Amino acid sequence: MTIDVQPTHGTDRVITLTSEENIEVDTIARYLAGRPPRRLDSTAWLATARELSSNLPVRLRQMLRRYTWDAGRDGVLLVRNLPVERDDLPDTPNVAGSVQRESTVPAAAQVLVGLQLGELIAFREEKSGALVQDVVPVPGMEAFQGNAGSVMLSMHVENAFHMYRPDYVGLHCLRNDHDNVAGLQVASIRNALPMLPEAVRKVLHEPRFFTEPPASFGDLRSAPQPHGILGGSFDDPDIRIDFESSFPLDGEAEQAMAVLGDALRSARRTFVLEPGDLAFVDNRLALHGRTEFTPRYDGRDRWLQRIFVHRDFRRSRELRPEGGHVLGSAGPTHPSAKGD
Ligand SMILES: O=C(O)CCC(=O)C(=O)O
Ligand SMILES: [Fe+2]
Image 1 (cartoon, rainbow, N blue to C red):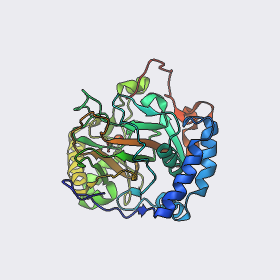
Image 2: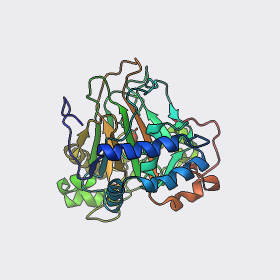
Image 3: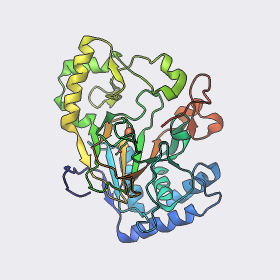
Image 4: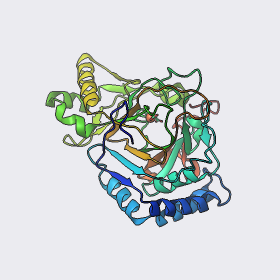
Protein backbone atom coordinates (compact mmCIF):
# COMPACT_ATOMS: atom_id res chain seq x y z
CA MET A 1 0.00 0.00 0.00
CA THR A 2 1.36 3.38 -0.94
CA ILE A 3 -0.17 6.74 -0.17
CA ASP A 4 -0.51 8.08 -3.67
CA VAL A 5 -3.35 10.02 -5.36
CA GLN A 6 -5.96 7.81 -3.64
CA PRO A 7 -5.98 7.78 0.14
CA THR A 8 -5.04 4.40 1.51
CA HIS A 9 -6.53 3.31 4.77
CA GLY A 10 -5.39 0.87 7.38
CA THR A 11 -7.39 -2.08 8.60
CA ASP A 12 -7.39 -3.58 12.05
CA ARG A 13 -6.62 -7.01 10.55
CA VAL A 14 -3.28 -6.88 8.79
CA ILE A 15 -0.19 -9.03 8.70
CA THR A 16 3.00 -8.33 6.79
CA LEU A 17 5.04 -11.48 6.33
CA THR A 18 8.66 -11.21 7.38
CA SER A 19 11.23 -12.18 4.76
CA GLU A 20 11.63 -15.56 6.53
CA GLU A 21 7.87 -16.12 6.44
CA ASN A 22 7.78 -15.05 2.79
CA ILE A 23 10.40 -17.72 2.03
CA GLU A 24 8.45 -20.34 4.01
CA VAL A 25 5.27 -19.60 2.05
CA ASP A 26 7.22 -19.51 -1.20
CA THR A 27 8.72 -22.94 -0.45
CA ILE A 28 5.33 -24.52 0.27
CA ALA A 29 3.64 -22.78 -2.67
CA ARG A 30 6.43 -23.81 -5.05
CA TYR A 31 6.19 -27.44 -3.90
CA LEU A 32 2.39 -27.36 -4.17
CA ALA A 33 2.46 -25.73 -7.61
CA GLY A 34 4.53 -28.67 -8.86
CA ARG A 35 2.25 -31.39 -7.47
CA PRO A 36 0.33 -33.40 -10.03
CA PRO A 37 -1.95 -32.83 -11.78
CA ARG A 38 -0.92 -29.17 -11.43
CA ARG A 39 -4.53 -28.13 -11.95
CA LEU A 40 -6.09 -25.67 -9.51
CA ASP A 41 -9.57 -27.10 -9.98
CA SER A 42 -8.58 -30.71 -9.43
CA THR A 43 -9.92 -32.42 -6.30
CA ALA A 44 -6.61 -34.26 -5.84
CA TRP A 45 -4.52 -31.10 -6.13
CA LEU A 46 -6.84 -29.27 -3.72
CA ALA A 47 -6.55 -32.14 -1.24
CA THR A 48 -2.77 -31.68 -1.25
CA ALA A 49 -3.21 -27.92 -0.93
CA ARG A 50 -5.57 -28.36 2.03
CA GLU A 51 -3.05 -30.50 3.90
CA LEU A 52 -0.11 -28.24 3.10
CA SER A 53 -2.05 -25.19 4.23
CA SER A 54 -1.61 -26.29 7.83
CA ASN A 55 2.15 -25.80 7.35
CA LEU A 56 1.78 -22.07 6.72
CA PRO A 57 3.68 -19.88 9.20
CA VAL A 58 2.02 -19.94 12.60
CA ARG A 59 1.72 -16.14 12.86
CA LEU A 60 -0.24 -16.12 9.59
CA ARG A 61 -2.52 -18.93 10.74
CA GLN A 62 -3.15 -17.09 14.00
CA MET A 63 -4.21 -13.98 12.07
CA LEU A 64 -6.46 -16.00 9.76
CA ARG A 65 -8.04 -17.64 12.77
CA ARG A 66 -8.56 -14.28 14.41
CA TYR A 67 -10.21 -12.99 11.25
CA THR A 68 -12.64 -15.92 11.03
CA TRP A 69 -13.54 -15.37 14.67
CA ASP A 70 -14.23 -11.68 14.04
CA ALA A 71 -13.52 -9.78 10.83
CA GLY A 72 -13.00 -6.51 12.71
CA ARG A 73 -14.64 -3.15 12.11
CA ASP A 74 -13.59 -2.96 8.46
CA GLY A 75 -14.29 -6.57 7.54
CA VAL A 76 -10.95 -6.64 5.76
CA LEU A 77 -7.90 -8.81 6.28
CA LEU A 78 -4.76 -7.74 4.53
CA VAL A 79 -1.99 -10.32 4.12
CA ARG A 80 1.10 -8.57 2.80
CA ASN A 81 4.39 -9.68 1.30
CA LEU A 82 3.22 -12.97 -0.19
CA PRO A 83 5.55 -14.43 -2.83
CA VAL A 84 4.89 -13.12 -6.33
CA GLU A 85 7.40 -13.80 -9.05
CA ARG A 86 7.89 -10.20 -10.11
CA ASP A 87 10.56 -11.02 -12.69
CA ASP A 88 8.92 -14.17 -14.05
CA LEU A 89 5.37 -12.90 -14.06
CA PRO A 90 3.76 -13.36 -17.49
CA ASP A 91 1.91 -10.56 -19.23
CA THR A 92 -1.37 -9.51 -17.66
CA PRO A 93 -4.17 -11.34 -19.50
CA ASN A 94 -6.52 -9.04 -21.40
CA VAL A 95 -9.43 -11.20 -22.48
CA ALA A 96 -12.88 -11.38 -20.93
CA GLY A 97 -13.51 -14.32 -18.61
CA SER A 98 -9.80 -15.01 -18.09
CA VAL A 99 -9.12 -17.57 -15.36
CA GLN A 100 -6.22 -19.53 -13.92
CA ARG A 101 -6.37 -23.28 -14.37
CA GLU A 102 -2.74 -24.33 -14.01
CA SER A 103 -0.98 -24.12 -10.69
CA THR A 104 1.42 -21.20 -10.45
CA VAL A 105 3.27 -20.01 -7.35
CA PRO A 106 1.06 -16.94 -6.71
CA ALA A 107 -2.16 -18.93 -7.28
CA ALA A 108 -0.89 -21.74 -5.05
CA ALA A 109 -0.01 -19.25 -2.30
CA GLN A 110 -3.48 -17.72 -2.52
CA VAL A 111 -5.19 -21.12 -2.41
CA LEU A 112 -3.08 -22.14 0.62
CA VAL A 113 -4.15 -19.05 2.54
CA GLY A 114 -7.79 -19.33 1.42
CA LEU A 115 -7.98 -22.94 2.60
CA GLN A 116 -7.20 -21.81 6.13
CA LEU A 117 -10.36 -19.66 6.06
CA GLY A 118 -12.64 -22.37 4.69
CA GLU A 119 -13.31 -24.01 1.32
CA LEU A 120 -12.94 -22.46 -2.11
CA ILE A 121 -16.07 -22.22 -4.22
CA ALA A 122 -17.04 -20.88 -7.63
CA PHE A 123 -20.26 -20.48 -9.60
CA ARG A 124 -20.69 -22.50 -12.77
CA GLU A 125 -22.24 -19.51 -14.54
CA GLU A 126 -19.40 -17.15 -13.70
CA LYS A 127 -15.82 -17.23 -15.03
CA SER A 128 -16.52 -20.77 -16.29
CA GLY A 129 -16.58 -22.06 -12.74
CA ALA A 130 -12.82 -21.64 -12.19
CA LEU A 131 -11.68 -21.44 -8.57
CA VAL A 132 -8.96 -18.86 -9.30
CA GLN A 133 -10.11 -16.05 -11.54
CA ASP A 134 -8.32 -13.13 -13.13
CA VAL A 135 -9.48 -9.60 -12.40
CA VAL A 136 -8.02 -7.67 -15.32
CA PRO A 137 -9.07 -4.77 -17.55
CA VAL A 138 -10.35 -5.84 -20.95
CA PRO A 139 -10.14 -3.65 -24.08
CA GLY A 140 -13.55 -2.32 -25.10
CA MET A 141 -15.05 -3.05 -21.67
CA GLU A 142 -13.75 0.07 -19.91
CA ALA A 143 -17.22 1.25 -18.83
CA PHE A 144 -18.44 -2.22 -17.81
CA GLN A 145 -19.72 -2.52 -14.23
CA GLY A 146 -17.80 -5.68 -13.52
CA ASN A 147 -14.22 -6.58 -12.92
CA ALA A 148 -13.25 -6.30 -16.62
CA GLY A 149 -13.96 -2.56 -16.51
CA SER A 150 -11.69 0.29 -15.47
CA VAL A 151 -14.18 3.04 -14.60
CA MET A 152 -15.21 3.33 -10.97
CA LEU A 153 -16.79 0.00 -9.98
CA SER A 154 -19.80 0.61 -7.78
CA MET A 155 -20.01 -0.87 -4.31
CA HIS A 156 -21.46 -4.35 -4.03
CA VAL A 157 -21.72 -7.44 -1.95
CA GLU A 158 -20.33 -10.17 -4.21
CA ASN A 159 -23.11 -12.24 -5.82
CA ALA A 160 -25.60 -10.44 -3.58
CA PHE A 161 -28.50 -12.15 -5.38
CA HIS A 162 -27.29 -15.62 -4.44
CA MET A 163 -28.28 -17.43 -1.27
CA TYR A 164 -24.85 -19.06 -1.15
CA ARG A 165 -22.81 -15.98 -1.96
CA PRO A 166 -19.20 -16.18 -0.77
CA ASP A 167 -18.41 -15.52 2.89
CA TYR A 168 -15.02 -14.11 1.89
CA VAL A 169 -13.70 -12.67 -1.36
CA GLY A 170 -9.92 -12.90 -1.66
CA LEU A 171 -8.19 -10.48 -4.04
CA HIS A 172 -4.49 -11.07 -4.61
CA CYS A 173 -2.54 -8.32 -6.32
CA LEU A 174 0.11 -9.49 -8.78
CA ARG A 175 0.43 -6.05 -10.45
CA ASN A 176 -1.17 -2.72 -9.79
CA ASP A 177 -2.00 -0.28 -12.58
CA HIS A 178 0.77 1.81 -14.16
CA ASP A 179 -0.20 4.94 -12.25
CA ASN A 180 -0.70 3.09 -8.96
CA VAL A 181 -4.10 4.68 -8.46
CA ALA A 182 -6.48 1.71 -8.75
CA GLY A 183 -7.76 1.05 -5.28
CA LEU A 184 -9.92 -1.68 -3.82
CA GLN A 185 -12.68 0.10 -1.92
CA VAL A 186 -14.40 -1.47 1.05
CA ALA A 187 -17.31 -0.22 3.14
CA SER A 188 -18.42 -2.21 6.15
CA ILE A 189 -21.83 -2.02 7.74
CA ARG A 190 -20.07 -1.96 11.11
CA ASN A 191 -18.57 1.43 10.23
CA ALA A 192 -21.75 2.72 8.57
CA LEU A 193 -24.29 1.60 11.19
CA PRO A 194 -23.74 4.44 13.70
CA MET A 195 -24.68 6.91 10.91
CA LEU A 196 -28.11 5.33 10.37
CA PRO A 197 -31.22 6.47 12.24
CA GLU A 198 -33.04 3.62 13.97
CA ALA A 199 -36.15 3.99 11.77
CA VAL A 200 -34.01 3.56 8.65
CA ARG A 201 -32.34 0.49 10.12
CA LYS A 202 -35.75 -1.06 10.80
CA VAL A 203 -36.82 -0.57 7.17
CA LEU A 204 -33.54 -2.03 5.94
CA HIS A 205 -34.20 -5.17 7.97
CA GLU A 206 -37.55 -5.74 6.25
CA PRO A 207 -38.02 -7.76 3.01
CA ARG A 208 -38.67 -4.64 0.97
CA PHE A 209 -35.82 -5.04 -1.55
CA PHE A 210 -34.78 -7.46 -4.21
CA THR A 211 -31.55 -8.15 -6.03
CA GLU A 212 -31.50 -9.20 -9.64
CA PRO A 213 -29.11 -11.92 -10.74
CA PRO A 214 -27.07 -11.40 -13.91
CA ALA A 215 -28.61 -12.87 -17.05
CA SER A 216 -25.98 -15.62 -17.08
CA PHE A 217 -27.52 -17.14 -13.95
CA GLY A 218 -30.47 -18.35 -15.99
CA ASP A 219 -33.53 -19.45 -14.08
CA LEU A 220 -32.64 -17.67 -10.84
CA ARG A 221 -33.61 -14.51 -12.70
CA SER A 222 -37.27 -15.38 -12.95
CA ALA A 223 -38.18 -14.89 -9.31
CA PRO A 224 -35.84 -12.82 -7.14
CA GLN A 225 -37.17 -13.11 -3.60
CA PRO A 226 -37.71 -9.92 -1.60
CA HIS A 227 -35.08 -9.66 1.13
CA GLY A 228 -33.85 -7.30 3.82
CA ILE A 229 -30.66 -5.38 3.09
CA LEU A 230 -29.72 -5.86 6.73
CA GLY A 231 -30.15 -9.23 8.40
CA GLY A 232 -29.50 -11.06 11.64
CA SER A 233 -28.52 -9.02 14.68
CA PHE A 234 -29.99 -5.53 14.91
CA ASP A 235 -26.84 -4.33 16.70
CA ASP A 236 -24.32 -6.01 14.40
CA PRO A 237 -26.15 -6.98 11.20
CA ASP A 238 -25.06 -8.68 8.02
CA ILE A 239 -25.52 -6.74 4.80
CA ARG A 240 -26.75 -7.76 1.36
CA ILE A 241 -26.87 -5.14 -1.38
CA ASP A 242 -25.41 -4.40 -4.78
CA PHE A 243 -25.95 -0.80 -5.81
CA GLU A 244 -26.15 -1.86 -9.47
CA SER A 245 -28.69 -4.64 -9.08
CA SER A 246 -30.60 -4.21 -5.79
CA PHE A 247 -33.87 -2.32 -5.90
CA PRO A 248 -36.35 -1.01 -3.32
CA LEU A 249 -39.96 -2.17 -3.52
CA ASP A 250 -41.59 1.01 -2.17
CA GLY A 251 -40.89 4.69 -1.53
CA GLU A 252 -39.84 4.34 2.10
CA ALA A 253 -37.51 1.50 1.19
CA GLU A 254 -36.04 3.69 -1.54
CA GLN A 255 -35.32 6.47 0.96
CA ALA A 256 -33.76 4.04 3.42
CA MET A 257 -31.52 2.71 0.67
CA ALA A 258 -30.40 6.25 -0.19
CA VAL A 259 -29.51 6.99 3.44
CA LEU A 260 -27.60 3.72 3.60
CA GLY A 261 -25.76 4.63 0.39
CA ASP A 262 -24.59 7.92 1.92
CA ALA A 263 -23.47 6.22 5.13
CA LEU A 264 -21.55 3.55 3.23
CA ARG A 265 -19.88 6.22 1.09
CA SER A 266 -18.69 7.98 4.26
CA ALA A 267 -17.51 4.66 5.71
CA ARG A 268 -15.66 3.66 2.55
CA ARG A 269 -11.95 2.91 2.76
CA THR A 270 -9.52 2.56 -0.11
CA PHE A 271 -6.69 0.06 -0.34
CA VAL A 272 -4.17 0.56 -3.11
CA LEU A 273 -2.81 -2.96 -3.24
CA GLU A 274 0.80 -3.75 -4.05
CA PRO A 275 2.10 -6.94 -5.65
CA GLY A 276 2.11 -9.58 -2.92
CA ASP A 277 -0.88 -8.11 -1.08
CA LEU A 278 -3.85 -10.42 -0.60
CA ALA A 279 -6.97 -8.67 0.68
CA PHE A 280 -9.93 -10.62 2.02
CA VAL A 281 -13.29 -8.91 2.30
CA ASP A 282 -15.90 -10.38 4.64
CA ASN A 283 -18.79 -10.47 2.17
CA ARG A 284 -21.35 -10.68 4.99
CA LEU A 285 -20.24 -7.44 6.59
CA ALA A 286 -18.79 -5.33 3.83
CA LEU A 287 -19.27 -4.13 0.27
CA HIS A 288 -16.40 -3.63 -2.13
CA GLY A 289 -15.74 -1.75 -5.34
CA ARG A 290 -12.82 -0.17 -7.16
CA THR A 291 -11.61 3.30 -8.08
CA GLU A 292 -11.07 4.30 -11.68
CA PHE A 293 -7.79 3.70 -13.51
CA THR A 294 -6.39 3.88 -17.02
CA PRO A 295 -5.33 0.61 -18.60
CA ARG A 296 -2.75 0.53 -21.38
CA TYR A 297 -3.19 -3.06 -22.59
CA ASP A 298 0.55 -3.49 -22.88
CA GLY A 299 0.84 -6.63 -20.75
CA ARG A 300 1.67 -4.60 -17.60
CA ASP A 301 -1.86 -3.71 -16.54
CA ARG A 302 -3.42 -4.25 -13.17
CA TRP A 303 -3.81 -7.95 -12.37
CA LEU A 304 -5.60 -9.39 -9.38
CA GLN A 305 -6.46 -13.02 -8.85
CA ARG A 306 -9.71 -13.71 -7.07
CA ILE A 307 -11.01 -16.58 -4.97
CA PHE A 308 -14.29 -17.09 -3.12
CA VAL A 309 -14.38 -18.86 0.24
CA HIS A 310 -17.22 -20.50 2.14
CA ARG A 311 -16.65 -20.76 5.84
CA ASP A 312 -19.26 -23.53 6.09
CA PHE A 313 -18.90 -25.75 3.02
CA ARG A 314 -21.75 -28.00 4.05
CA ARG A 315 -24.38 -25.27 3.73
CA SER A 316 -24.22 -25.09 -0.09
CA ARG A 317 -24.09 -28.87 -0.67
CA GLU A 318 -27.45 -28.94 -2.48
CA LEU A 319 -25.97 -26.88 -5.32
CA ARG A 320 -22.62 -28.67 -5.52
CA PRO A 321 -22.88 -31.84 -7.61
CA GLU A 322 -20.86 -34.71 -6.11
CA GLY A 323 -19.65 -32.50 -3.32
CA GLY A 324 -17.38 -30.55 -5.67
CA HIS A 325 -16.47 -26.90 -5.39
CA VAL A 326 -18.59 -25.42 -8.17
CA LEU A 327 -22.13 -24.30 -7.44
CA GLY A 328 -24.74 -24.91 -10.12
CA SER A 329 -28.16 -23.33 -10.23
CA ALA A 330 -31.11 -24.56 -8.20
CA GLY A 331 -33.39 -25.20 -11.15
CA PRO A 332 -32.85 -26.79 -14.56
CA THR A 333 -29.34 -26.54 -15.90
CA HIS A 334 -28.29 -23.97 -18.45
CA PRO A 335 -25.41 -25.49 -20.35
CA SER A 336 -25.18 -22.49 -22.67
CA ALA A 337 -24.87 -19.93 -19.88
CA LYS A 338 -21.64 -17.99 -19.82
CA GLY A 339 -20.41 -15.89 -16.92
CA ASP A 340 -17.99 -13.01 -16.98
O1 LIG B 1 -10.93 -4.65 -9.02
C1 LIG B 1 -11.15 -4.71 -7.82
O2 LIG B 1 -10.38 -4.23 -6.96
C2 LIG B 1 -12.39 -5.40 -7.32
C3 LIG B 1 -13.15 -6.03 -8.43
C4 LIG B 1 -14.32 -6.81 -7.91
O3 LIG B 1 -15.27 -6.30 -7.42
C5 LIG B 1 -14.26 -8.27 -7.97
O4 LIG B 1 -13.38 -8.81 -8.64
O5 LIG B 1 -15.10 -8.92 -7.33
FE1 LIG C 1 -16.64 -7.84 -6.66
